[in-house]
Image (cartoon, rainbow, N blue to C red; front, side, top):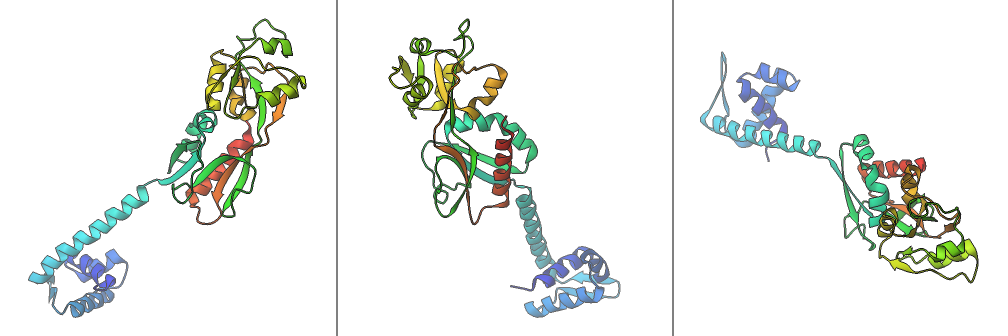
Length: 289
C-alpha cells in the first residue's frame, strides 16, 4: 500500500493544483506536502504532477490516479459519518410482564434522556444467553449469584399484593374477610402464590375459592383491571395503577415472594451504551413510581 500521508497530500494538491493551497488544507507546511508527494511518486515509480512556474499540472497517469484516490477518500468519509451517526444498539431481555407493566410505560422518558441509544427489547420467559442471543442486559427473578461473569443489581423485591378493580368490591368494607374472598374469582398465574397468600392473610385451613388460570402475570393484571377477579402481583408492577385508582388492594396482606427482580450485566465487555441503560434502569427503580 502507498503511504497514507502521501495519498492525502496528493489528493489535496490535486484539488488545488498548488502545493501552498494544499498545505493550508492539511495544516502543514508547503515543503511537507511537496516532500510527501515526491515520496508517493518514488513509491509508485512514476510522476503524478508536472511542476511548472504557475503551478502543477497532472500527468496522464496522475489525473486517472487522482480520480480514484479522491473516490476512495470520499467513501472513507461517508462510511465514517454513517458510523458516527448510527445509534448505539443495546438489547435487553425481560419477561413479558416486566416489559408491558413496567418498562414500556417508561420508554418515552428513556428515549428523551438517551436519543442516541437504539434500545431493543426481547420479551421472553426463557433464560436468554448473553453470548448466543446477543443480550447486553437482562432482568430476571431469582436469587444471586447468576453466574461469575454477570453482575447482579437488585431492582425490586418481590413484595406480592392482591389487587382488583374498585368496581369489583364497590359497597364492601375493606379489607375483605375470608368469607368475602371465598365468593370471588381468584386470578392465578404460573407462580401459583394464592395458597401461600391466603394462608398468610387468613391463617391455615382457609380454602381457596374458584379461580381462572393464566400463564403470565400480565394477563392476570389485565383481567383484574377488567373487573374479572382478584390478582396477585409484585407491588412495583401495579404501583401506577394503584396510584391512579385503576386498581385497589382489597386485602392488607403483603407476601415476600422470595424471588426478587435483578438487573444482570456483563462484568467485562459491557458497552458504554449498555452501562448507560443499566444506570437509567436502576435510577428509575429507585424512584418507586
